[in-house]
Image 1 (cartoon, one colour):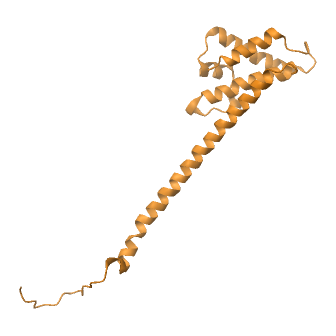
Image 2 (cartoon, helix red, strand yellow):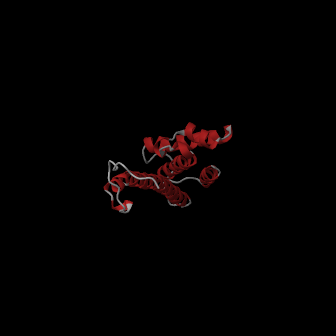
Length: 162
């Protein structure tokens, strides 16, 4: 071994690295990165959960409305309003990643969403026209009940929307 003639400029210590201040200061950066990543994951989970809750609420609304459409004691005004609402909700659910608000769905949006042929498109247009007619014309116009044939046609149209 050679002989040391000069002393080192800084005295070295045999203390473990975790007892040094520099080590703990350096650990702050990975800790902050970990906290940021966890916060981002929690935020994403909440956003995804909010979207899942919105979809579940729309599916629940569509199911309830379909049950109401099968009842016979509903006035034509309520029946056609509920039928058009079912179409709007189903179109919002079928829109996928576009996140359409059911209140913003019109005949053309619903027809394009479900890729309907011209016959089904016309039936859907008549449904929306009937709904608007009953909604804006007053409660005492026309017959007090929806005919069985109209009820069957509307249910068939709605159940075939996929």
